[in-house]
Length: 447
Image (cartoon, rainbow, N blue to C red; front, side, top):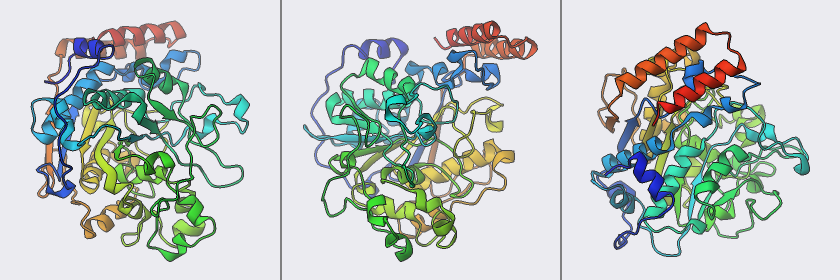
């Protein structure tokens, strides 16, 4: 059964044992859930919107990630796993998705794409905890996935988490994992490997030395594949090459050039540098971001270390966003002006990104009205990687995508109190003391 708050607190300390491991591995397209996308919604998963998504420089606690309920996110993931595979037990469901064998490694790709701003060019003065509110990965979905893996007997020390890519240029700029996320993860799972960059002191950095024949992604566009520094930029990190299982953890966002940021575009971050896919020299001339024939997002997925190892896609729609940075998160029309408070799960990257595209288009129509359609999905669908479809509206269904929504029963009393807190905040002087009080009272409603 899905996890309760009491279950989560207990299992964070005492890890459960499970039965026999599933044998053997199954082909992704042969499963009953091959084109199923599941969305789970809990309106109390986050409560940051009580302060109207306002940034408060004098209130360090106003970082949006501090107002996400871990046990609610864990319950959402468990419900989604059961819905995806039609099992009653989330551990049984995950074993079907990840036929894990002892000694195998699992790599989780996060999205810290805007955190390069934390790096000031000097490794001895990195401002890991600088207060910024761009929409990046939060800790709670990552912890929920790790907890699910540990339940099926994946040792913590064989789980790796991070966002490998660097920007091009001199010097190159890394995507780093802030302490505000890393500390939450290590408080519960101290042995999980959190990778921060290629040159972080202490041995916790990504490495790029593996000589496997597929360690470098090959691109179908000759101009991109053969450009200067191409092979080096298109190299996959050793942490992915040596893993047997890959879990893709994108954020639900659209992108003004790529059309959609989801499972496929999150994989731009699996290579050493995706900068040239965005630069005017290559993105415009060769349509790198928005080609429906030789899209590099599809090429990366076609690499056996990426698409071939992807067992599950867990899309973080808790706060989500409308574009690359999305600073700060905003309310969504389709969720009554609140955050989406969702997780979306699936194994078909084309279908999942189709659903993400529709959600952001419907939820933030004014923000994304001039954004491109996701040509990468057209390219991927033509190659048989999944099902591309766009629905006509929030109440409409899909013809080819097996789409399911599971909604946690709302607590109308708590939601009413949350709305009252927001009204009180908007009418207040918004002093630091008032902000802290509203946030603290909103957190209490998540219990």
